[in-house]
Length: 419
Image 1 (tube, rainbow, N blue to C red):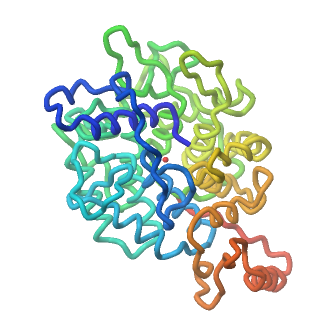
Image 2: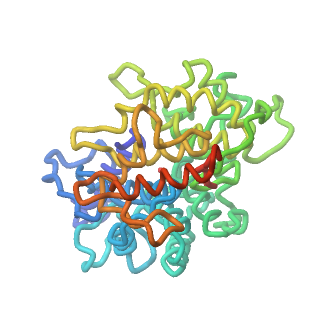
């Protein structure tokens, strides 16, 4: 399920694909200039999670799914991992999806968001250092002069893409402060996009999606803030559960006493905004009434936990637990990106993803793709999925025996973390 920001960028990608022969006119491509005729839906390969068209989110959802399953101690099918690595372009970047991996990639449609998520997934899985290094190398080459990253190379930078890339650099063991263009780092770019003391009081600390432009003032963006805060706090996917007694985040000092990006100020904005709207963030799109934003809320949970404020993340995680079940289902069945994001949020907040949002999210995600291998760390265990698509009885018996041996031991499935 694509967010409005990601949908706009995905439409731009489609525009690029449809208009590569247009030459210089490409520079003016925008969602409003998208072709009127939609391409025929693409059937996902068997190795891809979910039954929906993967054209705009194939690598994104596959990366999230692999990260979430690994975090939940499920070893994904080798075919699912191989599909992700095969999507990588020769220069190291990933597009949103390419049906023919034998054909050369179109550089203009490679995707910083997909690449950042693929890098984090492959780091979590381990054993793919060459692909990770190439991905990081590509990300460095497409950094903008102001230190930011855009969805596709050469576009205006945004907080959402910049945050995801910074998380990928950290996951790969890099130092984001050492990755700069024209002397500007990604953290510098986030600092420039963070709303400060000149903004309305209820927006201070938030991130704008992009810098203000003529007739378009900068304003708080829920998804950009939720994802960029994770990067500002030094995080990447997956996020480990934190202490339940974290202190409340400090709002931005006004008048400002320090320059640069403030993870505390962003965390304060998130926790205050969550509390003001019933412990969830809101989605506002032109022509539609505001509605609960499940994706941004889940990322806010991840960011608050990583920033050291799990106590402020708990009510939002509880709200997701009570309300987010339908979000994980779409017209084509299980939405793998939504399900995986909920698994990661549940793990970070100390919930059991096998009993969250009214379902076993881990089973739901595993059933949406190729049959998983043995549980992580137990190569002798049978497949987590039976041929009928459910979890095998032997696997369930094994889990029961382990639980019995523990005799009341609380097994935490939380791991460290970054859509």
